[in-house]
Image 1 (cartoon, rainbow, N blue to C red):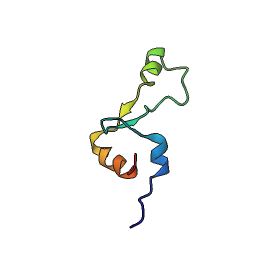
Image 2 (image 1 turned 45 degrees about the horizontal axis):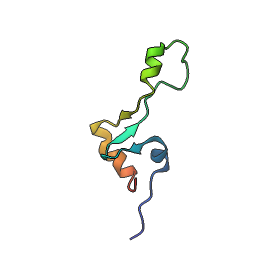
Image 3 (image 1 turned 180 degrees about the vertical axis):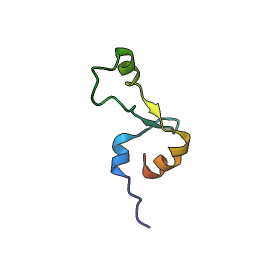
Image 4 (image 1 turned 30 degrees about the horizontal axis):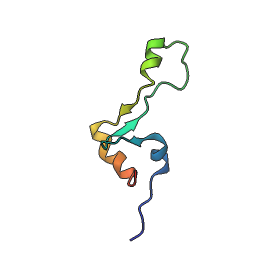
Length: 65
């Protein structure tokens, strides 16, 4: 049986933590930053977790990570 392929778009967007959780970056940090407060932009720096409903789909796209 051939090897499974990693979805390259998902590999660029998600990381797997040591405990097996799927980490993602926050949205709304790309542009139109002048009207956002410093506190908002600072909170967007932190990583988030993929929701429980999307966890299985994210893990299926990343078979070897």
